[in-house]
Length: 80
Image (cartoon, rainbow, N blue to C red):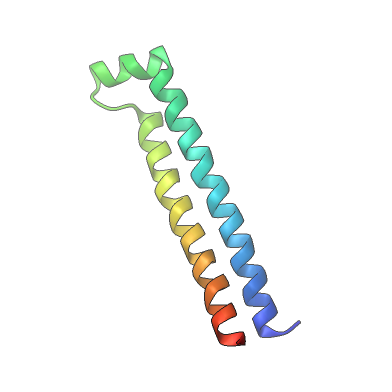
């Protein structure tokens, strides 16, 4: 396997995993916003722990997907 092929594979895997984690964070955030428990926790504590975890997942997933996208695009630019 060539080095460029391994970069393509790594970029693709990182992009897919990052996008999945980002999407899961969005779903988890929306579910917490719609739940009664999340609403009560925000009233009494100020913020929901599930909401904070979902935000961290969205940031992490977005960063990993961005790294994967950069690997995919730099591989294509160099191969031309």
